[in-house]
Length: 467
Image (cartoon, rainbow, N blue to C red):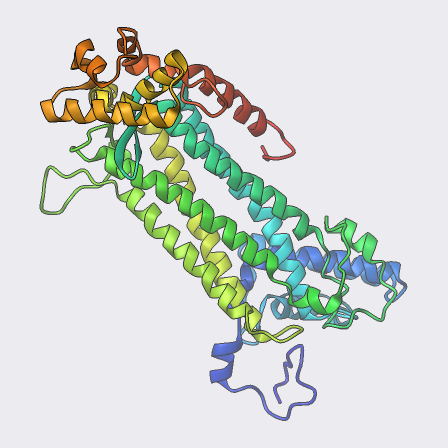
């Protein structure tokens, strides 16, 4: 056996194969957990002292040694050794070099199973705060643009076909609403990150008189686990985060798709900023929305990470299994993807230029057909289904003549139904149609101001969004 044994090895007569080490070792990617691993170890050393398992002097030695290790990581002077299997091994190996045999007491009653579960929860707590702050930045960029375009009309689409007039502000606020749900989901997930794994040991719980309540308070995990066998193998929080991230990706992909369409010269609704566009190596005229295309692609990547983890989890027997090591790379990759994507989306949105005249010009009378049906309901008491049928006949007539609804004469309308009168022409107006939509979530400037105020109040709530 090697003179530098691992955290395990007493019952083995050979060192692990180098081929196994290449497959098994996780230090190359779980090193990012160093801060959380040391944070958990310091709290655990103090818990051991409170339980009388180690002396206060030993706890102080362990704490000071761990703080030195943390400083080495923070200053990029920590040297990973070939024997370091994972972040836990690396920290304990270096701690032993610094303070000697007392370092061997730190792992009393603790397993890497509950240790890594604790590390991941601590890391996710910090990470989610950062992601939420970046989502807030995107929401604020959207709101700022929406406030500039509360009354500017544009076509609204269903099935990618012209449907009804809305405002640019209404379109922008639709994505604010999506991202608000994303933030709320992340906030809700935090309570499941506050259940303490440390003390569950390998699977059966600790036999030592550790005060888990105080340990949990020290780590901002005040909730106690229901079952230690479950807790060491629980990766619901990783899957939940990956789902939240995937849905963020889906929402940003939908925004990206709209921007790609609307910035196409065939639409001409949006002009892309130079700082967030790319060109072509052969076609000098090109202005490509590459950030938006990458947003679509990154959504697929994050969804793949989620599906991969769920597939790993679905067949596991009870307790910890090495398969769970496969939770980290998709998790870290997804977070890195969001950290790259979110600031670009915020910058891109803030710099978009809306061609308001082009957007208004894209509106036509056909998009007011519902207004006409509503007029029959409200002014003439016609049942909506009948009104829908009558207006459909007017649309067909206008289409046959290649004119708009407002260009049909009153006699044309009365030939369809005598209840039509001159008042119908007032309702065939884009701005009037928009102003009518004053209900919650509506497209009118009045409704938009109300919804913007609601979202701003949400964003300013420090308990939800960190500053």
